[in-house]
Structures are given as structure tokens and as C-alpha cells.
Amino acid sequence: MQTTDTHEPAPRPVIEKRSPVTGELLGTFPITTPEEVDAAVRRAREAFPTWRDTGLDDRLRMLARIKDVVRTHGEEYARRISEDTGKPLVDSLLTELMSIPLFIDHYRRTAKKTLGRHRVPTPILFPGKASYVEHFPLGVVGVISPWNFPFQLSMVPVLSALIAGNTVVLKPSEVTPITGEIVDEIFRRIGLPRGVVEVIQGDGSTGAALTRAAVDKIFFTGSVATGRKVMAEAAKRPIPVELELGGKDAMIVCADANLVRAARAAAWGGLVNCGQMCTSVERIFVVDAVHDRFVAMLEKEVRAMRVGGPDEHADMGPLTFPPQLATVERHVEAARADGARIVTGGARLDRPGQFYAPTLLVDVTPQMEIYREETFGPVLPVVRVADEDEAIRLANDHQYGLNGSVWTEDVDRGLALASRLECGQVMVNDLVAIVGNPALPFGGVKNSGFGRYHGPEGLLSFTHQKAIMVDRGWLDFEPFWFPYAGKYDAMSQVFHGLLGGNLPKALYAMTKLRSLTKR
Ligand code: NAD
Image: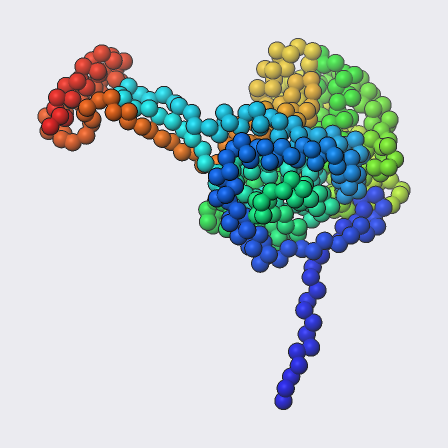
């Protein structure tokens, strides 16, 4: 008997993208399957030799076309990024789009020096030789990005890897697929050859497939939990990983700080992007002498915040996706139960979408969950400390070490305190802006990850280093080659001459080696 297969092919899984402002469905995005991930990596592999051999100047020239695309379409992109994330249009322009031309310009000025071959010293032990270091690209780089700055945190690592001569497969966050589409569109618009940048939309399963695929490095930005999985997978081959993870940034307000500026900064640094920022101010240490005055000023700033969607000219939008709102609610409730006082805010807003009131908490202590874990929401936890020493001790005694800031009128003292903080970036009398300077390296310590991007490291980390040594043919002998017979005494004099700082003795002994080496 003949049977007919009545099974329909399983429907393709999709990402359902909902508005953070209204909750309405904005669209569906097909999830890339593991087979399609492998195919994207194969296309990137095929494109690699040509892209590598294109040469730095030409690569930079092609990538600089992005500046025109961003200038022409930037405001449209800003609207779409805001629709995707809920962030104010001002933030989309400033923190997402504007940084990209800055990075391209910076690397157009500096990449040649960073990536070019350079000479390094050669010890006297090797007369007539010259030493060099040069770099070559890794191959295919997998970039996995998060949803909080979905454009910038995709574009910067992708561009850095491309400038260094790699091809890239990017997996943007499933929470912000509209921005993933924009990134894809930009690379199509500048007409890069097929396979140089492949954008694969999908969720954690797609990210996991990328870490298993034949890539040569994974550049990952996201949570500690996922970072561990990425690293475990990379360890099997092994391939290098770079992990840009979470933070719990300390802001230290000294007794001699400009309190007005510090309070305004705390409000912006903790609430911009609705606090969903790895460089968010998440712990504010204020010395006892100015604590109450500072809190009063900060309360005024927080109460003045306008909250709303991108069309409402608000200072702060909603949380980007529902689980983040749940984390914020849990942290604040637990803090309240454990003795923290809510000065203002502390509840979600009575409207559709994931809106939570900008919140100021005082009497926060290191035992509380809101102190120990990353909140990633619009909450400013204030900790009263006796002095700066206690603030530094507490700031450092934490699982995270991404950013920090120190507030004092005495800049030298500020710099001295900055040096004592265990984290990747510190600002004195400012915050967040440090991320926007493409000349400065960026990255974390402890659970905030490792590796650096931006600055020269941001290109070098996408390369292998190669050491080269050249014999220029100045000498007609090699003192240390065979035969060894009769050489021990002269060798011993070289040894003691060099180690004892008696260079003439060492050089004289080397001429003796010459006569013993020449056949
Ligand atoms: P996440 O770890 O949930 O997801 C990050 C990315 O990893 C997403 O694209 C996701 O799809 C993918 N992913 C999920 N499971 C995976 C797996 N098993 N293998 C491979 N990829 C997988 O993080 P998130 O919620 O998108 O981002 C928020 C976190 O990112 C916060 O902790 C924040 O502090 C951190 N972050 C760090 C920086 C930094 O520069 N240090 C910048 C921004 C955000």
C-alpha cells in the first residue's frame, strides 16, 4: 500500500518583535538555523583571502562610505533604533549613530601605524640582526551583540575586525532585530563583496551555533552567564574569545566635590538609556559629610525627569524588554524589604509598555541584591561611606570591574583615587564619555570580562602577532653555531660579561668565538 506523507514542514521559528512602548507586535524575523549559520561562515571564509589582500587603505576607503550612509539615513535609522529599543531619539543619534563616524575617522588616521610592521630592539647578543613585529588577520570573526546599544555594540567590533582584515559573521540580539536589519542594510549599501559581512538574525540558539561554527574568534558582548557558555564552547577548539560583560559601576563623591555637577551627572549616568548600560552608575558612594546635601540635589534631578516613548520628547524611555522590567522590580522590592529607603520612584508606571519610574534609593548596603547584582535599570542606589578610603575599598570588593568615576575639586587627588580603582575605565569629574573616545582602550576586569577594544588594542585584538628577525649579513660568522669544541671558556666570558654589565668583556669574548667558529 502506498502511503502519502501528510506531514507539513515545521513552520520556521521566528522572533516576534514587540514595541517596548505599547507592547504591539512590530514584526516577525526568521531565526537563522544552525545549517544557515554554517553556510554564512563558509561564505565569510571564502571572502576572507580577497578581503585580507585588499590592503588596508582600500579597506578603509570602502568602510568610510558608511559615514555617508549614516549621514544620509541617520535620522531614519535613529527612529527605527528608538522603535526597537524604546530609547529617546536623542540617545539613538548620540550614543548609537554618532560614534560610528568617529571610530572610522580615528582608525583612518591611526590604523596604518597600529597594524604596520614596526622595528623593535635586538639585544647585543645578536649582532647584525634586526627585529620586527607585524600583524595578520585571524580569518573569520564571529561577533555576538546585546540589545542595550544594539547598533554601536554591533558596528564597532564588526568595523574593527574588518579594518584588521578579517571577515565577519554578526549575530545581533533577538531583542532588537530591527537594528540588526539596519546593520545588514548599511553593509549592503556600501557594496562590500559577498561574504565580507554576514548578518544572521536569531536567538541564543543561533548564537550558540555561531560559537560552534568554523570561526577563528568570538567577540562577545552580553551577560556573564552567556559569556561563560561562549568561552566553554570556544575552549573546545580552542579559539580566542573576548568577553565584554556586565558592570556595577561605582561613583565616588568626595567631600570636596562640586555637588551640583555630581548630582546632575549621577542622574544622567544612572538613568540614560533607562539605566540599561554596562557603564551605568549602579553604586553611588557618598561620604558622610556631604551625603544628605547630595541626596537632596539628586532627588530634585530625578523628580525632574520626563519619562515616555520616543515621540514624547522624554529624557528616559521604557525598559527594552519585559524580563528587564522584572529584574528591576525584584531588585527594588528586595532592597526595600532589606531596609533601603525609596526617596522617589520605586514602581512601574501605570501605562502600557515596560515603563518604570526613575528611582532613587538610599541606605543601600553591600549585603543587598541590588548592590551585589547588575540591575540594568533606572535605579540609583546610594551608599553612605565614612570617607574616600571606605568608598575605594567597597568599590573594589565586588564581582564586577568595568567603569568607575571619582568626584573631587582636586584633580590630582582624583587621579590618585582613580589609580586605586580596580576596573577598566575611570573618569574624574565625568562619566560615560570615556566610551566615546576611540583612542582609549575599553574593557573590564573580574566578571566584567577581559580583552580590550577601541584604541590600538581594538585592532590588534583581531590579529595574530608575528615576530620577524632578519640577519643583514654584516658578520661572516655565527658565534653560537657549531662547532662547540674549545668554546666553553669564551662562552663563559660572554655570559659573565653580559650578566655582570661588562659589555666590552662580552664583546671581546665574542671575537674569540668568531675565530673558534670560522671553518
Ligand atoms: P545576553 O547574554 O542575554 O545576550 C547577548 C547575546 O548573546 C545575544 O545576542 C544572545 O542572543 C546571545 N546568546 C544567548 N545565548 C547564547 C549562547 N548560548 N551562545 C552564544 N550566544 C548566545 O545579554 P543581553 O541581555 O543581550 O545584554 C545585557 C548584558 O550585556 C548586561 O549584562 C550588560 O552589562 C552587558 N553589556 C556589556 C557591555 C560591555 O561592553 N562590557 C556592553 C553592553 C552590554
